[in-house]
Image (cartoon, rainbow over all chains, first blue to last red; front, side, top):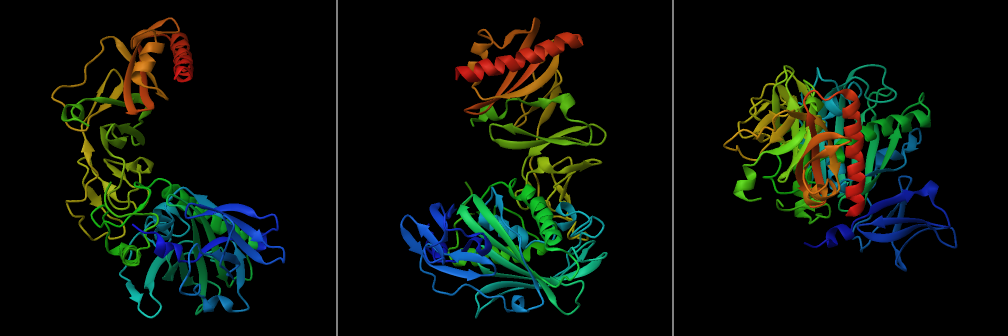
Length: 280
Length: 205
């Protein structure tokens, strides 16, 4: 199995606000890298003496071990000047980078993992929603996803039916658009950018572009970190650690249509770093 | 694992460590398992993996006669069959969704589990009961050697049996048994001696 398709993809490797001339030792797909600023003060990623390509976007520095054919995706909605952009930071998780993304695409776990925040046990039902692979962009999209949430966001006053849209524009990235409590008609943008350190270890960089005039940045970061630490308790305890792409190994239901589409899309593109193709 | 090994009882936990309505992780040579009691105290064991998304069921919760996965709340009954999928409350789960129930028995205050049903109940060591369990980073042979050449030994002046199960080539699950009715001070001394035995065993290997 070749890792070339994933090597040619873009990955987040650090916050732009945290880059230093001294550089920080990190890892990408098993290779040691140093992330920092070069002599001219420009962001730079070094891999064993080789300078890797870089992109500065969404508050993060992005790089690739190979030669990406496509530019890094964009999120036009996030450009609105009144949005609060939140660099949440990094959470290291002992799991496959692909499992981290799949968990982000899942709403059915809210009542049990994010109890009384993103879901509650009395409202666990997942209604039908729409999933497609958009041909032109070659992205997985889930739309018309609705769920009852007791506290959908730091800015939410009480329980509401939240509408979600999910987008997978890169193998280890997902963008979530969700109902924005203070601004009906607009979407909050919450992203999960995952840096694959190895097939079973990743650094997760959540990033948000919100309309929220009341919460402090600290409140927003705390809310997102609370949610993600709850997710980590799941992600580090799934067996096998790698994401199974063999449909026989796990049992999806209708609520998992996004995950099914994501797994198929990964397989079709040979995005298999962090995946298990056959049962071991 | 050979067929005859699959039908052997393996010590998995101390009975009193699994309270009614709770679940704990344990292991067989075939892999991780979840051991749990219904609210009324009935003991059950199954694979430690929810068939849905692979989450460890030992992180789940017990209500009534069922074990639920903490990830999406999928609920499993005493026969291991999936009873309920909360995301689709109107759906009757297909019979094929099963978390793999395992034969389980209790003797001497030890929970015994097997990969396949053994013909006989676990062998009883008359007059002894479980004191506590520990994981040793050593083989059963190394533990026996450190205990004076046999698993029938003495801990802090009290006669003891060590029941062992090799979980991996470097990890052995150990339950120490002491005579039924041993007083608290002697039990504490035996527990301290068991910890000392682990230090000696692990530093020798």
